Length: 417
Ligand code: ATP
Ligand code: MG
Image (cartoon, rainbow, N blue to C red; front, side, top):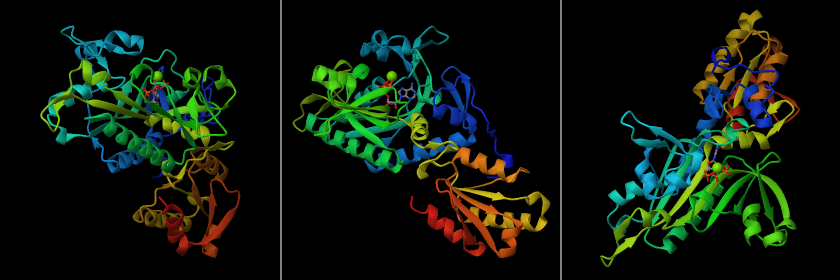
């Protein structure tokens, strides 16, 4: 990509209403723009990052044996009346009428829709266990949308649902999802912790939350130094009463949540199938969410410095920034830069060429703000000595590389994922 063509604008200062660092940096780096309270457009740079997060999640979900589907965002009220959540869910549910005055909502979650699908499609125990997932826009009319896409009203979620003949099968899938989430958050380079949680609004029995550890996190998690015990504070108070306040604590951003739902939805929505003896059994369910868009903000909360974003490598919008110095004054340099740029593209290196007529300092600080992990600087002097200058975003040291070795060098640097 040539930076001159990219729809972006870096800002020196963040708007005053941006409170936390990820919100400030996402605005300053030109990743998102607000349309209305808690409702955002993703600009090209931000959208590339979001797509990378989505791709890692999709790959690991597919590896786990889950099947991807796409359900409607708009859901009929009747299904929510069956589960009794039409009344229980409260004002966070965005309710809509169609032209015939029929009632709908914009889905904040999809237990009702998936349960309705499965009760129609699944007939026999031979089809179980079944894990279905989607990556889709949700709407929750949050009372206080804030922190940019961290707590927005419209956001991208990966939600998965599993169906089982018995509790043991649910337990096995729950364990599988727990390890799939661990793989996903590790691949995304996040420092996270899984904690025992309260199952809240969704209902059900056993549940764990996955928290990215960060000072700005809205949740408090507590853990024991002497055992594996880790829990969110709400749950610890229920389990350890006041003792919970003696435990070690940390702030966390909830990026994932897994639940054993049991028969909460399948019972009231009459979701049955025949077991091996021909007997009708009510299915047992699990559900598993990941805040895809929230992960982008959470990663920035954990990885930044005074210059800007430091992307975990799997999330970086571009791997390499190619910065020519005074290219607009030298035809010779321009030709060499364009030739290298084309070679990088041919080798599938995700490169962004700063072809603007800007001072080097401006180009450097923009690329550092955006958080591109690797940088090549190409100048007339370098052309004379046959070298380009290499720098890593997080290391304060330049290194000269022979031009003819540049491709192999960067390929090696970016090949580990
Ligand atoms: P929270 O306690 O943060 O409101 P939740 O318990 O309501 O989250 P779930 O219903 O478990 O969330 O949804 C699954 C995931 O979706 C959450 O773990 C979180 O990462 C993400 N998520 C939930 N609400 C929002 C929101 N308003 N904006 C962005 N992401 C969200
Ligand atoms: Mg919530």
